Image 1: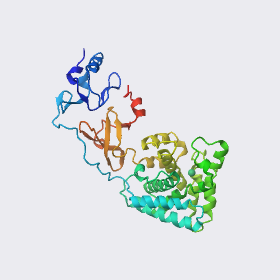
Image 2: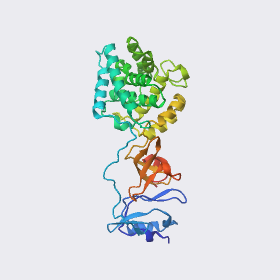
Image 3: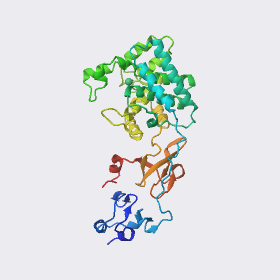
Image 4: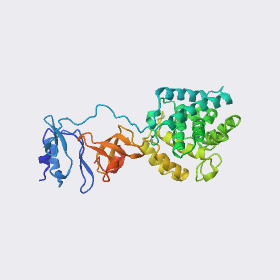
Length: 379
Ligand SMILES: [Fe+2]
């Protein structure tokens, strides 16, 4: 018989997952479980030492942690979500105006001059916001989105993400601005792709994909007629699907044959596409998208990708992560310049941990089914 009855009593409500690490990480009792006699006798069959586990329960209206009553009667719940001062923030007006402007760009009757002036105005607004944010302020993509209309939102997102990466690469303001404008216009050629191909939820046939692959060519054709627009902006749109390993399209360029603005756009484009919600798929979390992009590394400029990882908020404030101790924590705030080392809160014990101040704990991943399964936390 083990010592489970010393720490768990019938009627207790478990306040955080009870996990054992020996012989391997196993979730024994999920948070929210009401302890029954049946559960106690099942747990008695195992050779576990419950003294070594973190066991927090509510018992008769009090919080009891590893058999001892806590001085705080209630679990700590911050009343207000702390504000993330390390994020680039866009006003609601700017976000809405940006999407409206992007919609105009895709209108059939836009002249070249209008295309340039509208996208240039928007790129200046984006550049001003990105450059005036703190040196280490990151982009939280979920905070940017105002609409589900993918094409327009995607144009704005890519403009913003590309400007942010250009800033962190140390490019001068004029080039940051050109990068933003090129990002806003990168998919303008999709205007000429039939809607049934553009909005097809399933896989494209070879023929359909061949048509889709023409959109950077259409973009270049349309933009090349605009005399007042810098060539770098046009090339960004023309080459945003080229890959460093030469496996991209339309020309199969490789390495430095691809313009640096296009190399930035390629990263922003894929990241935004993966994290966007579409009619046929949910948007991925930032952490998951970055994981997938890491497997496509030879297609991207690796130096740019490494900088990009420091440009975005991987774990948004308010989201939950699982740490190497197997526990779930809420992300409370960020440390400027250290996006993977935020301040975490154990919501049930009220314990705060600043990952910049501890060497013992790191984030294993976001708190999701996939990570829980990987860690055996659901068995
Ligand atoms: Fe594209």
